[in-house]
Amino acid sequence: MTAPPVRVALIGIGGFGRGLARALLDPPPAAAVELVAAIDPMPRSDDVVAALAKRGIPLFPDLEAAQSVLAAVDLAVIASPIPCHAEQTIFLRARGISVLCEKPVAGSLAQLRQMQAHSAEAPGFTAIGFQWSFATSTARLKQAIAAGRFGAPRSLHTLVLWPRNRAYYERSPWVGRRADDAGRPINDSPVANATAHFIHHCLFLLGPAPSAAATPDTVAGELYRANPIETYDAAALTLHTHDGVPIHFATAHTCTAEIGPLIRYRFEQADIHYLRGGVGFVARYHDGRSEAFGDPEAEVHQKLWAAAACVRDGSLPACPLAAATPHMRLVDTLAEQPVHQIDPAATRAGSWRGVEQVQVHELDAAWIQSYASACLPHELGVVDWTAPGFNTPITPL
Image (cartoon, rainbow, N blue to C red; front, top):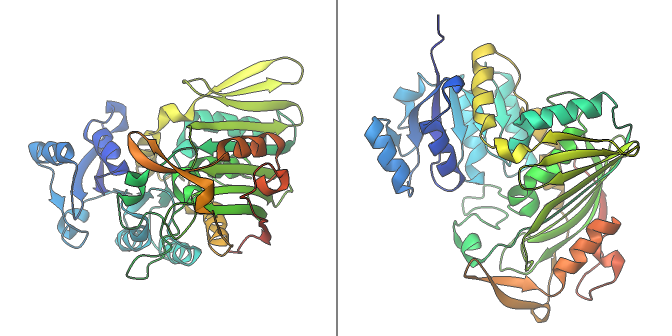
């Protein structure tokens, strides 16, 4: 007898939620899911709104208004703004509904602790949508690392230069802010949000179990701000895990070119590189062999189908709340560190996708050199607008 489909509610149908809505409206048959409700106070995706209406799927302004439908929901997918993540997760988990919440977990570690407390008391699970963690290609790579096929990890390196323009920072009142007008923490930044997948992936691959991430003990770094925001738009970091593995991560939105993610993971017996264009992760062994593991970017919606499968069989999701906690601890730690305001004389007005963008002189070259040498930009001394950074323990849970 065929099991009934997993009934799904989607919270947030704009921005990233728009893509999730399209996937849930037209899921692969094997996923066995059914979108039964959507929640959004200001729906702007006209095509999604029309598709919901055509199929008779109700659209509610908030969770309170949707309570009659939520009683029949098995899985809620949260794609709302960061300041809503914690309170919406707690609301849903209190009703025994499993949750797949988009990254980042929340705006602060204190909020994450509240989410953990409520999740521990409720049936089901809370998963966080770091989509690379749910990919089958990631599972294969993580299994190979855990089995010692590459030897011990030596260092992990990632560079992500993703330009973002004025429209990006003006698209919502929470972008680039430390907290909203109601005082709810946000701490939006490239590390917390736009390029968060890639730093989390480093921690996840080194995790001690299939659904766990490694714990970072310390972070040294430099944070910079050129846009008129409260947080930062460029960062260069060196983390050390509890096992002493260094993770070098450099990211920026005030760059001139889109570069990356450039990824190089160094192990005792192999180097692992990420190749774009659908190739994905390739291990190049020091004895001349190579092995392909696939591209997690080709499986961005796998988290939806995997979460639904966990609802059906009661299994643990690939990225439960605990696996996202190390990343949140990092974000919380960085929120307490100094941000260097870049002198306007070191910036220029450029454009990205036809909209004005703040660009910082020679940032691209400095960040590329930082990635290649595993040194922080100020240590390189190649541009005069950098400043000494910090070296601090990661905030404990």
